[in-house]
Structures are given as structure tokens and as C-alpha cells.
Length: 454
Image (cartoon, rainbow, N blue to C red):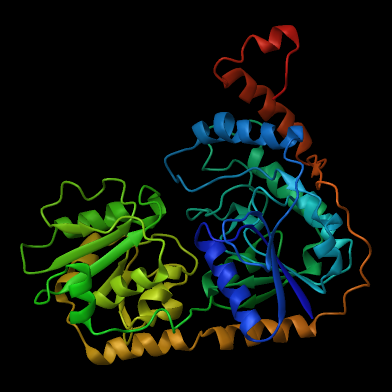
């Protein structure tokens, strides 16, 4: 069975890392697995960069629309990415797509659009789609911030300050009109995501399965804390709490709430460590935090997790954070809010959950936390239930249940063309493009001489 994963990137971002780990797990299980991506940064032989027509006008127009018509038009409700359903490339003409038996979509923003997914469906191959965020079934938001309008029409999106053209409504309509959702199998890493997808207007009739991410417990594993702390320059005789995020300024990551909680803690013999980008949120707190910055090495990240007594995960909205599973695989319990996919892994035996947004409760959980060898072992055991062997086997079972793929036809060697928006989104796209050109600095004169549209 030839499996082809389609993802915007192969390494950058949590969704890409989760897809890459699944790809590796399938290879170790003896499966024929490959990845086709837009942005390849690895050197792996079974990962291929798609040949795309990036010179197509839709590509640059979408970039300009996102920058000048979408980005500045956000409300204070959320600053998580909001994307229009473009660009989308016709990957159905790629030779690897033609040759595979199973297509597995991941995070595909900037690579596939509803019309280009429809082209893939016409090949007749089984298509699985992992929901790394909520974008597959919304009209534009990647996390809904508590809004349930994706269950109907995404009318009057609360994440857009002005939605006079119905951007989110048209974005959802594009998916509803272009794709046959009943012909897709949706894979959700958390029960929370699966429940949201089942309520959605798009996937209410689709097959939806819950399959968590896998974690390589050979890399992420417990180490003696004294050894890990010596390597990192952390104190041996003080409890240590760790936290981190790729983008700390993103509201749903809950760094503002964590800062409020830390501010409530009395002076004590406790140390805090962080990694990633905290965006200065913790600069003026009375507690000292040792920052390790951005970390690209899984081995160093595992050492950080192993050195900590607990990992703090203050997300207000999240699917199934890789960091949660990584920490637990290292025998480090998790303290966080009771949201999203956290309850799937964090139980009283493996960590502590408090009511979402309860800064005082979070502070109490940190203050009252005591290192516990049994809880550390339980955290490790929970992660091991989702080993690459277990998760790859579950995927292979699902793949095997699907109907056989049609015989391959020759693929194209030409750059894969970017498709225009579908009928549902075309009128809105035209209005967005006109608006973006007016807002784009230094481009006003082009409107009077019929200049470039790029």
C-alpha cells in the first residue's frame, strides 16, 4: 500500500511535526509512506517538494489580501491565524499523487483549496484528513475562540472587525459547494476536535475517527533530574516548572493568564524555565525565569522536560499539543486548563487541570504541586499508550478498510497550476483584492494607469 501525506510543510510548526512523526512511524512499521509538501526543510529522501506554479496571479494576490485586508481587520477576540481558501494547487496532476493508493491530508493552508481538494477526490482514491486545527470545517478561522457559527454558515464572523462581504460565510460555502465531505475520512487527534467536527455544517455526515498523535518514547524519555539539571545549569535543590510555546503572543496560548498566575505566587524557593518565544510577557514578573530560547533539537527539548518537576500548559484553546505528550513521555506531569485535548491525557494520575482561565486556580495548582514518583510514572505510561507502533497500526487498519485506489495514470512534469477560487468565493475574492490594492502602500498610482495586479 502506497501512502502519500500532503502537508504545507515537513518540519515547521506543530502540525508539520505531528505529520512527520506519523510518516516516520509508518516507515518503521514497514509501510510505503511518502510526503509531498510545499515547504521542504528536511533532507529526507521520502519527502518531496511539490513543483508549483508560484508565479500564478492567485498566489501573490492571496498574500497581499492576507496582509492588507485580513490581518488588519481582526477583532480582539483572537489573533490566531485566519486564512481565506486560497491559494490551491492542482496536485491531482502530480506523479506521486497519481501513483499512490491512499492520500492523507494534513495542514494544507497555502497548498490546497476546496476546489483543488475536489480535484483530488475525482481521482477516486481514499482520502484521509487529519484536523490539526479547526480550519478544515470553518470559513476562515483556525481556532473558533468559542464561536459555534461553523455549525451553520459562519455568517458575521466575530473574528473580523468588518465582514460586509461575508468572507467567512463565503469561505465555508466554498467548502460546502466544492468538496464531497462524505467521501472524506476525518481524523481528529482529540475528542474535543472530533466533537466539534461532528457538529460542523461541513462534516456532520462524514466519517470521523479519533486518533491521537504519536510520540517517539525513545527520544522523549525520563532521565535522572540531577543529571538533566546539571547539563542545563538549573538548581538541583529547587522544584522546577517548565513552560514554552512557538508564539507566546498568540492569545489562545494563555501566556497572559500564566503571567497573572505567576504574579499571584508568593516568593518561594521555586525555579521556572521556559523555551520558545514568550514575546516579553514575563519580563516584569517578580519571579525569575531562565529562558532557553528557541530549541530545534528534540534531544535538548527532552532534556528540558526531564529536568522539570511539572510542565505548565496554560492554553485556552488547543487540539492535542505536542508539548503535552512530549513532557509526559519524559515522565513530567502536566498542569494546565481543562480545555481541548488536555483531558484526553491529563488525569489526576498524570497531572492537574483547573477551570479554563482561572488564574488563581492555576497559581494554587503550582503552589501546591509536589513531585511524585508515581505520578511521573503514570505520565510516562500514558504517553507510551500512544507509541508510534500503536498509532501507525491504527492508521494502517483504517487505510486497509478503504476501497482500492484506481490504477495510476501518467503525472505531469509541468509546475502544478494554481486554481482560481470557486463560484462561492469568487465575488468575495474580487472585492478583497480591490480593497487590498487600495490599502497597499505605494501602489495607489497603479489604479489610474491600469498597472500590474500583483
